[in-house]
Amino acid sequence: MPGVPPLREPPATPWRIGPIDVVATDTHALLHDTPSGARLRVTGTRLSRDAHYATAPRDARIRLARAGAMIALRARGRYYLHASAAVDPQGTAWLFAGPSGVGKSTLAYALSRQGWQILGDDGVVLEPVASGATLHAWREPLQVSSALAPEFPELRARQQYENTNDPRRRIPMPTLTARHAPLGAIIFPRRAACDRLSSMTQTMALAELMLQSTQVLLADSETPRHFARLRDVIAAVPSFRLEHTQKQLHAIAHTLRGASL
Image 1 (cartoon, rainbow, N blue to C red):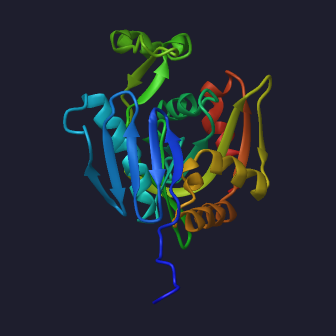
Image 2: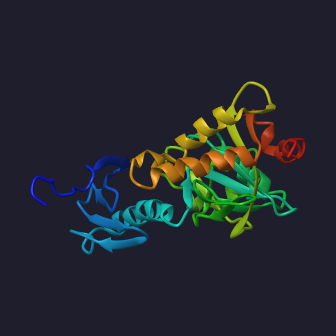
């Protein structure tokens, strides 16, 4: 119609996942791996190769596919979290969320030594459901710092697998694994001079969980639903702050049993 401007797609939102630059709109996202120049496109739940992908090094293609999956999952109502998770003997999942270095993987491994199953080391997938949420595995090996060999002597038998390019010199450790489990509680750990487990307000827990689900910052058409689902999960399950010392490497299962679910 004369005088009516044509419809235009909303402006793209720049974003970043590690070394990958992301430009997202309401209909698609273009991922650019800066070290290799390779690109991958995400449209809804579909990943498609773009420039230089076919000739990129394997590690670049893995990075792109991983980041692309994080974005594509949102269209299915599932959300990647930077977190670890373990499933207790009763089949309930405990989520450990927080930035790198707070002890997520170490605590999960400590639980695995007592027969708990592992859902993820540095990432899990959250699916909100009517009763709360289900956690799904994000398949990566659980890795433990070789510096913890005095606490976990079995690390010494696997020193040949130590990643010497990793500042934490982590070692992938075999564990019992689970595919999915209902979420029972969210734990936000941090290292401290004493051990304490305390309840968190929903506002504080939501703020911290968003920091570990940064895809909510894409500001695309999925963002309102993404934020609402995280809010619903926080309202449905209890959240705790775990201040912990080295003692928790051997006491974590007992500590969690004292939580009120």
